[in-house]
Length: 116
Image: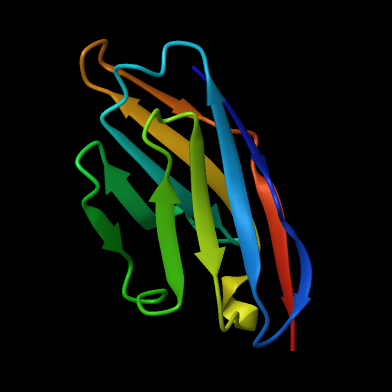
C-alpha cells in the first residue's frame, strides 16, 4: 500500500485546511486509516482514525474542530481542519492498518504551519 498526503501549507490561526491522502496498491483489506501528527521535539500522536465501518475517534485536542472522512473504496482519506491553532503546527501523516496481512503503512507526511 502506498500513501501520499497533500493539502498542507501555511494558514493563519482560526483558518481551515483540508488534508488528503491518496492510497493505492492492496487497499481492499485495510481495516483502519488514521491521521497522525508530529510537532518539532514531540512524539508522533494520533489525531483521528476511521474504521472500515465508518466509526471515528478523535484526540481530545482536536475534537469538535477536525473531521476525518474517507471514500467507500479506501483510496482516499481526508482530514478537514477548522479553527486551527498554533498548537496544530506539525507534520501530518496518513496511516493504514491491514490486519489480514499484519501490516501497517505510512505516508511521507505533509507540513501544516499555523501562524498566530
